[in-house]
Length: 227
Image (tube, rainbow, N blue to C red):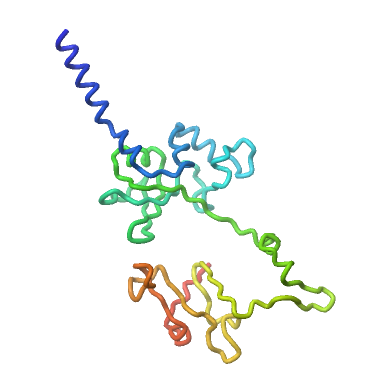
């Protein structure tokens, strides 16, 4: 009887030491947490549904796996690690994005294991964006401030002169005439190459390199526009 009680106590002690606390401690995206609560088969089935499907859960309506990841068994997440990050493996691919954040492509079982081991401090489900350029002018309310007359082929309304525009892309062809003024000088005020080796990064950030308009005019900045 005493041996039975001792074994039961050891089992209970082992359960109390299970890594449930690590799961609670990690900062997990609510949509991702909902996926983690389901079986692997259920999660794959849900993520395989078209984004517009009425049977797709509300928390996944805005999520669609990236075109480069057609396998719904894979997850793309943004992770901040607790301590040293794990080594890459067949079911874990890491893509450094900054000092504390990595893009990670992995499976649900591997992510569950990492969470259970307390290796993850924060994790967010990736939500790739899709272009809606055919409706962007309507969404932005542009017809109310600038109109095109098909009879005269002229625009009327505000011109946008003096407005500073920020763009995020794989690069910029700063030799294009649209990026040069009437004197041939660049219209680009500053250019931040986030993939460059750390050298003169923006003051607010600790990675990449920031190029000035003078750098662009002297063609010191890379193009990086292969798409």
